[in-house]
Image (cartoon, rainbow, N blue to C red):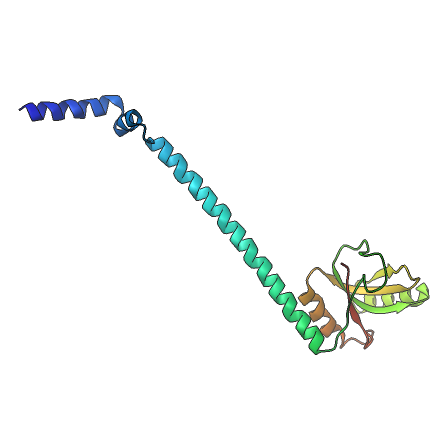
Length: 171
């Protein structure tokens, strides 16, 4: 009988005093609210970590694709020239990193004629005045080396595209 009274008193105190959290708090242990907050924090940190891993995988894929494309360019004896190799002070103020260059001319009128041929074939052209006085005609801009290389290969079949077309790396 005495055990039953103690159990009933304990059950009543649990119900009246708020359950196990009361005893956890008395013992200096985390309450259910603390545990839930920690669980949510761990979930958020895990999601952020997964986002970082996903981002890293995307970058690794881009690097891998770029290396494979560079190997293909090298094997096909294609020309990839950076603005640094042109003897300029670095990057031109262009919106994209890569361009297919279909001509470089000492006279801007010749560059305009080449640009008109490209635009007539459906390729918007960008005129790039280099610091050495030449004006180049650029088409198929991209921030992806793989994309611009695919464009160069496709352009080889176009009548307006010269055999010595090359890729500009505006780095």
